[in-house]
Every structure is written in C-alpha cells, then in structure tokens.
Image 1: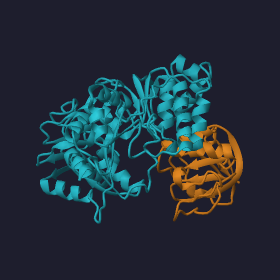
Image 2 (image 1 turned 60 degrees about the vertical axis):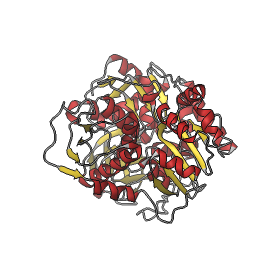
Image 3 (image 1 turned 30 degrees about the vertical axis):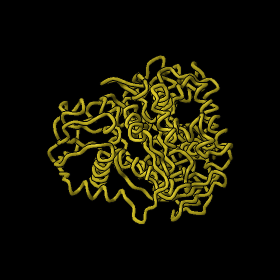
Length: 129
Length: 397
C-alpha cells in the first residue's frame, strides 16, 4: 500500500515502523543519549526510537526540541525517518538540520508498529510492505 | 513557493553551507505554511542562547553554522544563562560558564551582536512600524508586533538564525495583513496600573484565549500605558496565551486599522484582576529571593529602584536583571553604585528564567507574571507578585 503525503525533508529509507498516537516533545520527552522515550505516561515511554521510522501525529513542546533531534543524529540514536499526520515547526526544523527524511499529511492509522515501511522524503510518499 | 535568483543560489550552495542550510529551513517552512514567496527582513532576534537550554546538541549545530555563516541583517541575542562578567558572584559554576561562553562565541563569529537581552527594542534593535522582522523570544515578538506594529511570526532558535544568515523569511502568518485582525474583544472596566498589574491582566487574557482557542485580542478600556507596563503585559500574555499580537484601543498603532471584533466579547472587572493576582501568590510562602527585570529592566525602572534603595540595605538575595548596555548607563549615572551599596546585585545578560538556579531558593518575589510562571514550572520556587515598590520593601524587610 502506497500512501501519498507531502515531502518535508529528502531521502529514501526502508526500516521498521514504531507508531504512537501521542504527540512527541524531543526536548525533555526523549533521552538523546539512549534514544528512548522518557516522557512519563507517554504511549512509547521506555521504548527506543533509534533506527526506526518514527510515526506520530505531530510535535509538541519547546523549540529546543529541534536541537535535541540534531544531537540524536550525531549520537547515532536518532530515528532513520519521521512520518507525521501534520508537521509542526519544531519537527520540520529538526529534520532539516539533522538531515532526517520526513513526510507528513499521512493517515498514520494505516501504519502499525513493527511493519517494514519505505519512506520517500524526496517525493513525499510512504509504502507499507 | 516562488524564489528569486539569489534565494535559489543560496539553496544551491553558492553562498556557502550555512546559507544553504538556512535557506533549506526557510523554504521548508514556507512550503509547510503555504508562503508564496520570501521577504527581506530588517532585523533578527535569536533565542536559544542559554547553555541550559541549548546543551551540547545546540552548541554543535551553532559551531557548524559558524564555520562559514555570516549574518546579513542586524541581529541580536536573547539572554544567556549567566552574567558574562559577574557570573561567579551570582553562584554560576565554572563548567557552565565555559560552555555558555562557547555558545556566545559561536554567535559572535557569525556577526551577531551578543547583547543577550529579551528587550532588543530598548537597546538598538528597534524596527519601525510596518517593517518585516524575524524575531524569537515570545515577549519581544508580542511587543514588536503589537506595540511597534512591526511584523513577525513567533520564530524558534534555528529559524531565527536561518533568517539572520540569509536576510529572508517566508511570507506567511503575521507578515500578512489578513492574519492581523483582532479576534476577541476584551473590555477592561477597572483601572490598571504598574508592571505587576499589567502582568496580571496579561495572565487573565492569555488564559481566556487558550480556553477560546484564539490568539489575537482587541483590548479596550486602557487609557494610557508606559513602555514598561506594555513590556510586562506582552511577556505575560505571550506566556499564558501564546499571543504574538494584540491591539489596544488608543494605545497600539494598528488598533483602528482593522474592524473591532464583535462576535466574541469578554469583560474584565476589578474582581477578575483580584482573583488573578491571588493566583500569582502562593500559600506557605517564605521569600528568600527578589528579582526585578522580566523582561529586562529599562533605565527608567533602574532609576526607580535606585531611588527606593538609596541608603537602605537589602536582607535577601536581590537581582536586577537587565541588558548590559542599560547597565552601562546605570553605571555612568551612578544608579549602579546606589543599588550595589544597598547589597542588591545586577545580573546583566541573563534573568531569573534562564539562569540555572533551579532549587536554589524557596520563594521568589517579582513584579512579573511571566517570572511567576517560570519560577514555578522551571525552577520549582514558590512565587509572589507585587509592584516594584513592594518588591523593594520585601527585600529590605
């Protein structure tokens, strides 16, 4: 199944999806050293997002979150791609400065955790295998 | 999005790596928010300066951008995590100071004026009515849009830096007149006076806007307001309501440019002001810290503090947070000596919100509703709001 959305940052990646229906705040909500979600009560609390395609509705929290994403990329703890329902400025800027392929305007109900998916940030598509 | 040749060249890397990365950020934001084109900005205010907020991550990014990045427009900085000259006396540790200076040095290499203040409009980064700018710092965004009538969106650290390194910003949001109309009519039926009271008013309006899901209030009933009262109001309404623009009848320059909203109306009476003030005073309070200057104190406020402290001695930790250029004026006029002889301390370049002082004090007294919010949320202090006179009274008690 191929889902068409909007390109935010270029690049093509195939990896396993990790899906949440909660918003994500990278500043304070994710540990940049371990790659784990640490926000108390978050659907993904305790789960690692490293090396996965992180699928979530939208970003939240401080604009410093863009810098946290950049740090994760440098630490090799970042997700390899991001898929959003509706992108916000923090995540968009984070993907651009960290060079993480990103697509939004995707109905994320079509993607389940553990599925192999191909994110094409250059044309703005997501393929669920 | 339509790009001019120069903008395309930046995107292709002809102006270097930092300009390319910046243009990538700006075009992506432009696409996301349906901007038709880029516009030139007169000036930029950058947030994300305190090392406590940046961390190594932000610092690495800045260092990379500083390799070949140079600002193309007037650009100033938000407060840092410490007073750059007086950090030791204010209890900041050496490691933090070292890292904070690395961040400020990276900004300086890009040609940014490292003023470290949240009130750029008081110290030379002063746009005029109608000019397009790209500012971060929510209180300054609100001030420039509303009080000056300049035009900016609420930028974050990286997008403001990108605007500085290219001189451009995507043309959407508050840059367009169609998005600057008042949405909610707020009638004030009580006298409002002093920085503390304007902060209380900002909290009431901000809370109400969040409840309504609206952003732009049109306020009536304020007959006259000072720069200091307006900067306090801006900081508060931006903190509690995420507001970037308001109109105030007979006070702000655009109030009669757009129609007065009529559909959503709410009234503020003395009772609402009293209740909101009560919400900014914690119970079981033990005040051991007094701080004035959120947003940064003006020379007028410092003159007032000097008058109140003349010949007195403070018995509690008392900070006056301000921009370094303002502090220099206070030095020359002699206000600083009076204030320091009384035992109060200047904390220039920083403030009680961004300095790493979490848990250092039990209770803080301030004249700012914004400082109350962050004093509680970020630094875990109990808080009390009062006028500048009451703050000084508390400090010498």
